[in-house]
Length: 273
Image 1 (cartoon, rainbow, N blue to C red):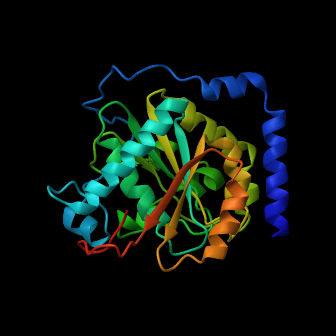
Image 2: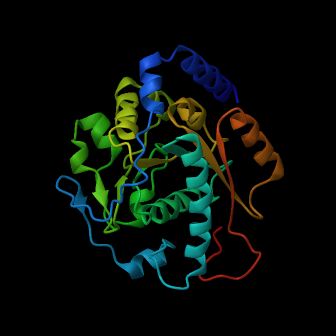
Protein backbone atom coordinates (compact mmCIF):
# COMPACT_ATOMS: atom_id res chain seq x y z
CA UNK A 1 0.00 0.00 0.00
CA UNK A 2 3.02 2.32 0.33
CA UNK A 3 3.22 2.85 -3.45
CA UNK A 4 -0.47 3.67 -3.53
CA UNK A 5 -0.02 6.25 -0.74
CA UNK A 6 2.84 7.82 -2.70
CA UNK A 7 0.67 7.88 -5.83
CA UNK A 8 -2.08 9.64 -3.88
CA UNK A 9 0.39 12.29 -2.79
CA UNK A 10 1.69 12.73 -6.36
CA UNK A 11 -1.86 13.06 -7.65
CA UNK A 12 -2.68 15.76 -5.10
CA UNK A 13 0.55 17.60 -5.90
CA UNK A 14 -0.22 17.44 -9.60
CA UNK A 15 -3.65 19.02 -9.12
CA UNK A 16 -2.28 21.84 -7.01
CA UNK A 17 0.51 22.70 -9.46
CA UNK A 18 -1.32 22.40 -12.77
CA UNK A 19 -0.72 25.32 -15.09
CA UNK A 20 -3.92 27.37 -15.23
CA UNK A 21 -4.19 27.61 -19.00
CA UNK A 22 -3.78 23.85 -19.46
CA UNK A 23 -6.41 23.19 -16.80
CA UNK A 24 -8.72 25.72 -18.42
CA UNK A 25 -8.24 24.18 -21.85
CA UNK A 26 -9.09 20.69 -20.61
CA UNK A 27 -12.28 21.86 -18.94
CA UNK A 28 -13.73 24.17 -21.61
CA UNK A 29 -15.98 22.27 -24.00
CA UNK A 30 -17.82 23.60 -27.00
CA UNK A 31 -21.55 23.09 -27.06
CA UNK A 32 -22.03 20.56 -29.88
CA UNK A 33 -25.29 18.98 -28.74
CA UNK A 34 -27.08 20.34 -31.79
CA UNK A 35 -24.63 18.78 -34.25
CA UNK A 36 -25.34 15.22 -35.29
CA UNK A 37 -22.40 13.03 -36.31
CA UNK A 38 -24.24 10.55 -38.48
CA UNK A 39 -21.51 9.48 -40.91
CA UNK A 40 -17.73 9.45 -40.59
CA UNK A 41 -15.18 8.57 -43.25
CA UNK A 42 -11.90 7.40 -41.73
CA UNK A 43 -8.92 8.45 -43.84
CA UNK A 44 -6.00 7.75 -41.49
CA UNK A 45 -7.56 5.38 -38.96
CA UNK A 46 -7.76 1.81 -40.25
CA UNK A 47 -11.14 0.11 -40.29
CA UNK A 48 -11.40 -3.60 -39.62
CA UNK A 49 -14.22 -6.00 -40.42
CA UNK A 50 -15.50 -7.57 -37.24
CA UNK A 51 -17.54 -10.78 -37.19
CA UNK A 52 -20.72 -10.46 -35.16
CA UNK A 53 -20.46 -14.12 -34.27
CA UNK A 54 -16.90 -13.69 -32.97
CA UNK A 55 -17.91 -10.63 -31.00
CA UNK A 56 -20.85 -12.50 -29.47
CA UNK A 57 -18.50 -15.27 -28.41
CA UNK A 58 -16.40 -12.63 -26.64
CA UNK A 59 -19.57 -11.18 -25.03
CA UNK A 60 -19.31 -7.91 -26.95
CA UNK A 61 -22.70 -6.36 -27.72
CA UNK A 62 -23.50 -6.16 -31.42
CA UNK A 63 -26.81 -4.31 -31.38
CA UNK A 64 -29.18 -7.24 -31.78
CA UNK A 65 -32.87 -6.47 -31.38
CA UNK A 66 -34.39 -7.49 -28.05
CA UNK A 67 -30.97 -8.12 -26.53
CA UNK A 68 -31.44 -7.67 -22.75
CA UNK A 69 -27.71 -7.11 -22.21
CA UNK A 70 -27.63 -4.33 -24.78
CA UNK A 71 -30.65 -2.80 -23.04
CA UNK A 72 -28.79 -2.74 -19.73
CA UNK A 73 -25.86 -0.92 -21.35
CA UNK A 74 -28.29 1.61 -22.80
CA UNK A 75 -29.47 2.36 -19.25
CA UNK A 76 -25.88 2.68 -18.11
CA UNK A 77 -25.14 4.93 -21.10
CA UNK A 78 -28.01 7.24 -20.20
CA UNK A 79 -26.81 7.67 -16.62
CA UNK A 80 -23.23 8.27 -17.77
CA UNK A 81 -24.23 10.84 -20.40
CA UNK A 82 -26.44 12.73 -17.98
CA UNK A 83 -23.64 13.07 -15.44
CA UNK A 84 -20.98 13.93 -18.01
CA UNK A 85 -23.09 16.54 -19.81
CA UNK A 86 -24.20 18.14 -16.55
CA UNK A 87 -20.57 18.57 -15.48
CA UNK A 88 -19.10 19.25 -18.94
CA UNK A 89 -16.85 16.20 -18.66
CA UNK A 90 -15.49 14.36 -21.67
CA UNK A 91 -13.11 11.79 -20.17
CA UNK A 92 -13.59 8.92 -17.76
CA UNK A 93 -11.58 6.02 -16.36
CA UNK A 94 -13.04 2.59 -15.67
CA UNK A 95 -11.44 0.50 -12.97
CA UNK A 96 -12.28 -2.18 -10.38
CA UNK A 97 -11.10 -3.21 -6.93
CA UNK A 98 -9.38 -6.38 -8.16
CA UNK A 99 -8.87 -8.61 -11.20
CA UNK A 100 -11.75 -10.55 -12.74
CA UNK A 101 -14.55 -8.03 -12.20
CA UNK A 102 -15.10 -7.49 -15.92
CA UNK A 103 -13.96 -3.87 -16.18
CA UNK A 104 -12.45 -4.29 -19.66
CA UNK A 105 -15.56 -5.84 -21.18
CA UNK A 106 -17.64 -3.18 -19.45
CA UNK A 107 -15.38 -0.51 -21.00
CA UNK A 108 -15.81 -2.01 -24.47
CA UNK A 109 -19.57 -2.43 -24.29
CA UNK A 110 -20.15 0.98 -22.76
CA UNK A 111 -17.99 2.56 -25.49
CA UNK A 112 -20.03 0.79 -28.17
CA UNK A 113 -23.30 1.88 -26.58
CA UNK A 114 -22.11 5.48 -26.28
CA UNK A 115 -20.95 5.48 -29.91
CA UNK A 116 -24.48 4.68 -31.05
CA UNK A 117 -25.52 8.15 -29.86
CA UNK A 118 -25.11 10.48 -32.83
CA UNK A 119 -24.10 13.59 -30.86
CA UNK A 120 -20.49 12.56 -30.26
CA UNK A 121 -17.69 10.19 -31.14
CA UNK A 122 -16.00 7.81 -28.70
CA UNK A 123 -12.36 6.89 -28.20
CA UNK A 124 -11.59 3.81 -26.09
CA UNK A 125 -8.01 3.68 -24.79
CA UNK A 126 -6.36 0.61 -23.24
CA UNK A 127 -4.28 1.99 -20.37
CA UNK A 128 -4.13 -1.22 -18.39
CA UNK A 129 -0.43 -1.15 -19.19
CA UNK A 130 0.42 -4.23 -17.15
CA UNK A 131 -2.26 -6.45 -18.66
CA UNK A 132 -3.54 -4.89 -21.91
CA UNK A 133 -6.35 -6.98 -23.36
CA UNK A 134 -8.81 -4.87 -25.36
CA UNK A 135 -7.38 -5.91 -28.72
CA UNK A 136 -7.94 -9.59 -27.84
CA UNK A 137 -11.69 -9.02 -28.15
CA UNK A 138 -11.31 -7.88 -31.77
CA UNK A 139 -8.21 -9.59 -33.20
CA UNK A 140 -6.98 -13.19 -33.30
CA UNK A 141 -3.40 -12.08 -34.02
CA UNK A 142 -1.26 -9.58 -32.13
CA UNK A 143 -1.53 -5.97 -33.29
CA UNK A 144 0.62 -2.92 -32.46
CA UNK A 145 -0.46 -0.82 -29.50
CA UNK A 146 0.55 1.98 -27.17
CA UNK A 147 3.86 0.26 -26.39
CA UNK A 148 4.91 0.67 -30.03
CA UNK A 149 3.95 4.34 -29.91
CA UNK A 150 5.91 4.96 -26.68
CA UNK A 151 8.95 2.77 -27.31
CA UNK A 152 9.28 2.54 -31.09
CA UNK A 153 7.97 5.89 -32.29
CA UNK A 154 5.12 4.36 -34.30
CA UNK A 155 2.52 6.84 -35.52
CA UNK A 156 -0.88 6.82 -33.82
CA UNK A 157 -2.54 6.43 -37.21
CA UNK A 158 -0.86 3.02 -37.50
CA UNK A 159 -2.27 1.88 -34.16
CA UNK A 160 -5.79 3.33 -33.93
CA UNK A 161 -8.58 1.27 -35.47
CA UNK A 162 -12.31 1.49 -36.09
CA UNK A 163 -14.05 -1.87 -35.43
CA UNK A 164 -16.72 -1.31 -38.10
CA UNK A 165 -18.85 0.54 -35.54
CA UNK A 166 -19.85 4.08 -36.40
CA UNK A 167 -18.23 6.84 -34.32
CA UNK A 168 -16.00 4.45 -32.32
CA UNK A 169 -12.18 4.37 -32.46
CA UNK A 170 -9.98 2.19 -30.26
CA UNK A 171 -6.39 2.77 -29.14
CA UNK A 172 -5.26 -0.70 -28.02
CA UNK A 173 -2.45 -1.83 -25.79
CA UNK A 174 0.05 -4.53 -26.65
CA UNK A 175 3.30 -5.21 -24.80
CA UNK A 176 3.01 -4.84 -21.00
CA UNK A 177 4.99 -2.23 -19.05
CA UNK A 178 6.59 -3.28 -15.77
CA UNK A 179 7.07 0.38 -14.76
CA UNK A 180 3.47 1.22 -15.64
CA UNK A 181 2.78 3.95 -13.04
CA UNK A 182 5.98 5.81 -13.99
CA UNK A 183 5.08 5.44 -17.67
CA UNK A 184 1.61 6.90 -17.10
CA UNK A 185 3.14 10.11 -15.71
CA UNK A 186 5.93 10.34 -18.30
CA UNK A 187 5.98 13.50 -20.48
CA UNK A 188 5.20 11.58 -23.68
CA UNK A 189 2.19 9.82 -22.14
CA UNK A 190 0.88 13.02 -20.55
CA UNK A 191 1.16 14.80 -23.90
CA UNK A 192 -0.65 11.91 -25.63
CA UNK A 193 -3.49 11.87 -23.11
CA UNK A 194 -4.01 15.64 -23.28
CA UNK A 195 -4.09 15.45 -27.08
CA UNK A 196 -6.61 12.62 -27.05
CA UNK A 197 -8.92 14.51 -24.69
CA UNK A 198 -8.71 17.91 -26.34
CA UNK A 199 -8.38 17.34 -30.07
CA UNK A 200 -12.15 17.03 -30.68
CA UNK A 201 -14.65 18.86 -28.46
CA UNK A 202 -17.42 16.34 -29.24
CA UNK A 203 -15.38 13.26 -28.33
CA UNK A 204 -15.85 11.12 -25.21
CA UNK A 205 -12.67 9.35 -24.11
CA UNK A 206 -12.82 6.17 -22.02
CA UNK A 207 -9.65 4.84 -20.39
CA UNK A 208 -9.62 1.19 -19.34
CA UNK A 209 -7.38 1.19 -16.25
CA UNK A 210 -5.87 -1.49 -13.97
CA UNK A 211 -7.60 -2.54 -10.74
CA UNK A 212 -7.16 -0.14 -7.84
CA UNK A 213 -5.73 -2.64 -5.37
CA UNK A 214 -3.26 -4.33 -7.71
CA UNK A 215 -1.04 -1.28 -8.34
CA UNK A 216 -0.94 2.50 -8.04
CA UNK A 217 -1.62 3.20 -11.75
CA UNK A 218 -5.21 4.40 -11.34
CA UNK A 219 -4.27 6.79 -8.53
CA UNK A 220 -1.30 8.14 -10.48
CA UNK A 221 -3.52 8.70 -13.53
CA UNK A 222 -6.55 10.15 -11.73
CA UNK A 223 -5.54 13.83 -12.26
CA UNK A 224 -5.79 13.35 -16.03
CA UNK A 225 -9.46 12.27 -16.19
CA UNK A 226 -12.69 14.04 -15.35
CA UNK A 227 -14.38 11.13 -13.59
CA UNK A 228 -13.98 7.49 -12.51
CA UNK A 229 -16.34 4.52 -12.69
CA UNK A 230 -15.78 1.37 -10.64
CA UNK A 231 -16.87 -2.13 -11.68
CA UNK A 232 -17.50 -4.74 -8.98
CA UNK A 233 -18.35 -8.42 -9.37
CA UNK A 234 -21.35 -9.86 -7.60
CA UNK A 235 -20.21 -12.83 -5.55
CA UNK A 236 -16.58 -12.09 -6.40
CA UNK A 237 -15.68 -8.71 -4.94
CA UNK A 238 -15.12 -8.86 -1.20
CA UNK A 239 -16.74 -6.12 0.86
CA UNK A 240 -13.38 -5.25 2.42
CA UNK A 241 -11.78 -4.84 -1.02
CA UNK A 242 -14.65 -2.63 -2.17
CA UNK A 243 -14.26 -0.40 0.89
CA UNK A 244 -10.48 -0.14 0.42
CA UNK A 245 -10.90 0.70 -3.27
CA UNK A 246 -13.57 3.29 -2.54
CA UNK A 247 -11.37 4.99 0.06
CA UNK A 248 -8.69 5.46 -2.60
CA UNK A 249 -10.97 7.35 -4.99
CA UNK A 250 -13.62 8.86 -2.70
CA UNK A 251 -12.19 12.36 -3.27
CA UNK A 252 -12.42 12.00 -7.07
CA UNK A 253 -15.43 12.65 -9.32
CA UNK A 254 -17.23 9.31 -9.17
CA UNK A 255 -19.66 8.43 -11.95
CA UNK A 256 -20.89 5.44 -9.95
CA UNK A 257 -20.41 1.71 -9.47
CA UNK A 258 -21.43 -1.01 -11.91
CA UNK A 259 -22.59 -4.33 -10.45
CA UNK A 260 -21.26 -6.87 -12.91
CA UNK A 261 -22.15 -10.55 -13.45
CA UNK A 262 -25.37 -10.08 -11.52
CA UNK A 263 -27.33 -13.25 -10.80
CA UNK A 264 -30.57 -11.37 -10.27
CA UNK A 265 -32.01 -12.97 -13.38
CA UNK A 266 -30.84 -15.28 -16.15
CA UNK A 267 -29.74 -13.56 -19.35
CA UNK A 268 -28.03 -14.73 -22.52
CA UNK A 269 -24.36 -15.78 -22.21
CA UNK A 270 -23.73 -13.84 -18.93
CA UNK A 271 -25.43 -11.14 -16.93
CA UNK A 272 -23.76 -7.76 -17.28
CA UNK A 273 -25.35 -4.70 -15.73
